Amino acid sequence: MTLTPLTRPARLRPGARVAVVAPSGPVPAERLEAGLDILRGWDLDPVVAPHVLDVHPRLGYLAGTDEDRARDLQEAWCDPAVSAVLCARGGYGVQRMAGLLDWTAMRAAGPKVFVGYSDITALHEAFAQRLGLVTLHGPMTAAMTFLKDSGTQESLRATLFEPESVRTLGQDTARGLVPGRASGVTLGGCVSLLAAELGTPYARPSAAGGLLLIEDVGEEPYRLDRILTQLLRSGRLDGVAGIGLGSWAECGPYEDVRTLLLDRLGGLGVPVVEELGFGHGESNLTVPLGVPAVLDAESATLTLDVPALV
Image 1 (cartoon, one colour):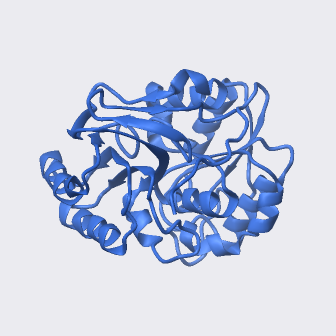
Image 2: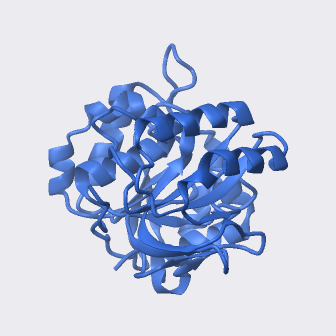
Image 3: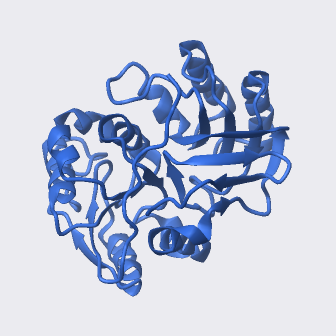
């Protein structure tokens, strides 16, 4: 089954209400407040879900209980006054709560903007599979990159308000690893989460016809090898049209990572472009998932056929 473009939500307007939720790990209060100030500076009206600053009573790596994290996300999504749902941070926990969401009610709430990355990759897949919606792989409200990097902030702001102005994605460091030019529908995120979602009802079984955009953090080359090998052996990458690579922070010397990526992905016979500027690196450009695009290894760019939002 070949991937097809998903439904695009509406762009944001000044004064729009946006909800901030914490589906994964605990959120530092001071960083959250700094992120909210940035959103207010864009003339948005951010509201914080009730359990965003919670910590699970026994498992300190979770932002509150699975039930509370799921309730926050569902109530924010189903609130007709909310135009977008932004994640506060990643970490771990989405997979524990995805099955607690009422996807029928969320589908009935209609399309709206959803933003996050890292552990939120599992929700990007679920939103595509269950709701058929374009989502934004982009910075989270309490993430240090969002708080400190002006390019990261501007990429998200422009995507939210002026999506036609950011149709070509890339950065000066980007270059082609495997030559070629391919068209397809964007998908992807944190590659370890894509592998962890294999076999679940919340992930798409195939990337056929897709432009796979992947990155990760803190995975040494041998572990990345295992992750990519699992995706290859499962058939998840059969028919993929092209691959765009983001950051590989704390994954060892980049030359070693590049060697591994070429070894595992070069044999697919599709164009591969590296350092497109999304993910856990010093900059985190916002990339829409679920839109038709062109990946060009010669120009080292990803160009969207249509704006991320309507």
